[in-house]
Amino acid sequence: MTTSKKHVWMVGVLAALGILAVYFLGARALLGEAAAANLELVLLGVLALLGAGAVLVTLMSLLGLLFAKSRADRLKNLGGRMLFLLGILIILVGLVAGSQWAAHTPAILGDNGKPLEGSIASLEKLRLGGTDQWLIIRGHDINKPVLLFLSGGPGASEAGRVLRFNSELEKHFVVVIWEQRGCGKSYPSLHLKSALTVEQYTADVVELADVLRKRFDEEKVYLVGHSWGSIIGVRAAQARPDLFYAYVGTAQMVDVLETDQMIYDMVMDHSRQSGDTAFVQTLDKQGRPPYLGKSPIQPYAALFGREYALFEVPNIRSEEYRQDGDAILLMLKQPEYGWLDRVYYLLGLMNTFNVVYPQLQEMDFRQDAARLDLPVYIVLGRHDMNNPSEIPEDYFNQLEAPSKQLVFFENSGHGMIWEEAGLFHDLLVNTVLRETYP
Image (cartoon, rainbow, N blue to C red; front, side):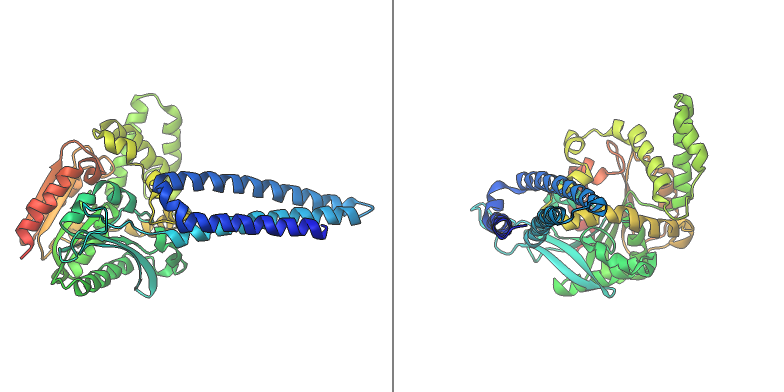
């Protein structure tokens, strides 16, 4: 490549980086979060296509170089193509790094359009269990009681859904959404795979709850777990009931193996009755759970995905949730995530699940957690077929606790706290808070 062409290349790359700097320092905020996310996604796609094309052309040039008699001209062309590829990579890194730097949780605004006095809206990194993990903390009044939310999974973050559908809770609580180890923004902690155990997650919850109550000068905090989060929620409540005013288990898991086998039988029966011979063969091939091995997520995804399509989707009554409830699409738009975090999110769904889910096959809270020494509220969706109510209802009936309530949301399934968000908010504010907060 000639000196003049190198100069043009450098100017072009620097100009692109300058445009990115202007964008992240000011223009991005003017666009709004959703529009910015869409624009960046398109730009990432274009860069990825250009990069892939440049790699392909470079490889072909290298191959041609092996068989060329005169290599001088080919080397010049190769150099130019490699510089083009380098430019694409530099711009791509700049875009991703800028998005990570710009990640934030929006301020809570008052009627005057300015940040509400006494509120908190913070995206924070915290050392838990020897590794860096992330918190999203939001509340209209920093002096309100603290609510710690544990996402379902394992390997997932439900922050997007909580932020989208449960913002009403920020008026009554300081809401803390924990990005668990190996999930979402905390995915890099996965490098300690030996620490991805139920015991370590439980220890993280206990440590975090203690940190939060001290930081916000509260005697205790409220603990809310959804699905997988209800597993470590029960474990934490069992280990340290003194840290929590109450435990709220939504889509409460009790016996994972029995539940999954129930789902398998239900989906198999439906597939046979509907004449879906292809999926009957799929289920026959993978057999009844548990699925172990190197990548158990594959057979579980096939089973749970079909269950969701057959039994959950038809019963979603909330149009708002039907339109906006997809966790992946929410994750792609939420400002708390940069583009590297979004890659982490997808990796966590696969890799963390594969490590943690096989560990859950022996648990049965009817034997393992038959007593909890704090107020307990179990919330179930009437149409939840991902966690059919027979097992958690049986657990509730056997559970010993100072006080306990079982609440059914009649018009929702596994995502009841978002499908019927108003009922969930009313339960927490007018029942749980009123009955348990001193």
